[in-house]
Image 1 (cartoon, rainbow, N blue to C red):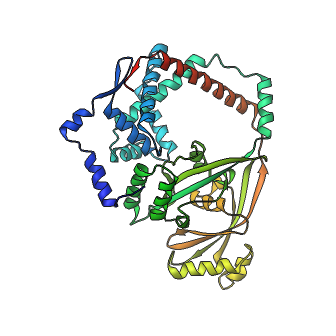
Image 2 (tube, helix red, strand yellow):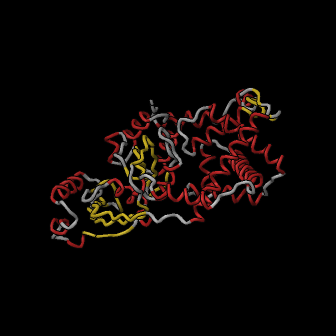
Image 3 (cartoon, rainbow, N blue to C red):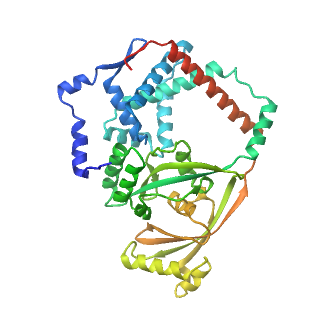
Length: 403
């Protein structure tokens, strides 16, 4: 990836959003037809911009077109089933979609507008999804059954499920003054230019504020159960080779690239309690502060050693106990990388370097899901398979031209 200078890239990006009349006219040329309904060049470009904004790095034109065709088929299915949604339902769906990215509806629409995605594109994307969900519920809700024997088998499999580990790369962009706007512009450039792990590593080396930038943003294997829930939810939906959408963490934007995922043959714990120590060193990332943190790291082997190492200021050591979900996402992510008695010096808080040391990590065996939870899960899985088959039938029956 060759990332052009920021100012040049932004000028080119915003310049490209004001097409000449002849180009603008071409935007409404039909690229494909689904049962006689056109999908225009404009819709295709809008979908690609929209999905890139959601973090779909490496999205191809073919994939964007397939998604638009599916949306047309969803609407066709809605007409067959006589399904419609109200304006209130649509606004609620748009709001819920924004909240999944930890944004308000207004924040998301403003961010989309900033990269040239119209609110109408967002509305029609959500509308198609809501109609399809209702079609699936109406058409298959009464046809899917789950027996007690099905639940017994699922519980047996769940009890021996493996533990999942993931191999991530990260880019951390600060959002504290005076870096906020620059970081958002860099995030836009990354979303538009990064296509693979090498691109991501180059961007991390150039732009990331995390210490991992020295390794191109690459992290070691992390147990998925150790990660903060809000980040784990983002990673769960990704496949290896994909880049995440931007994730808001305290004072920063985080972007992740999933390099690999593996399962290890041992039961996965569901509850984790972290006992950790925290020390704040004045003057943030100043050279002398970083040197002081390195010396501290060399003088201690356990969390208890911190009190002796800082005997002149014992109150400087704070001990905490919490689960990952109770911690700010940046702290939880730092601790997820650490083994017992390892130290992190990556975070800055209020102008001070935040030294974190993991004292212990207590794991408890997962509580087995209830029979009702298993029933719901199996119902959703089976309805999903029926929906996939129905979509394939709709595609086979439709007259699709010019793909």
